[in-house]
Image (cartoon, rainbow, N blue to C red):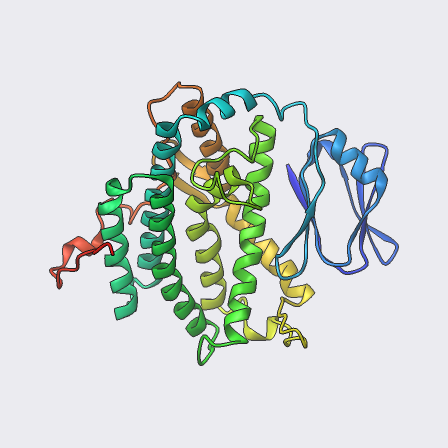
Length: 354
């Protein structure tokens, strides 16, 4: 299956018979049968013609509109034959506080764990005190997680972990991009490419959720968050550290993405990737999704298949076929699943709730 990304300003998507056609400067540059298309994303100043919209809607192909900073502009609303398949089960289960709390705790635990593993991978040969402290605190949050007695408390754990984690990630990315500091506009450059990666991740998850017959508005951890597709956000939290953050860091460290790939700030302070750099990032994003990894419960899978696997894991728990939801957990390394933090004696740190 193919994901269509239309990035060049002035491009547009048409449909002829059962084929999608991408035109740039009124010249046909891509034609693909609709049965081979999994999702469509259009960026700034790219148009979706009515025939293409009708064809996408008839086949329940997700269509997303983004600006070049990865900000959400809109989505083609789909009335899929699959959309109501598990709707009643979702409504019933989200009214069960034990169900929502159990699955939310699994997701937060996976998020904190995966953040810690990504920091470890990125700093294996050149750790910093800030990263080491962040990893220790993330470990403490994981240990303390059973103390969270509500969804709100679990979101606080997630928010605290994210704050610790992104302080370290931002510092690492600033060094990788050779920025002298994380002040504006450098911080805005980092934020824009992370936001773009998050948007692409959410769109990929949306496709799997929609095709599986789940309503994307009925999650657990983000159930009461406004302006979010809560189930999409739940899944994205597990995968964001290693699919988005680690990818951006790898591209920066290897100089595949450099400061020259970003536009100068506009009068409004907006920074984005140049069109060629945007296309380059999307190519690496697609390659990342095809990368194989050892899944804890399913052996070797591509990251794309891992996303689909987690949707099936959720459905199994939703229907009561399994006792709990098993999230996506990264391995520390090939030989052990034990945190390297515990191997070295260090000053004891304690979490204190105020």
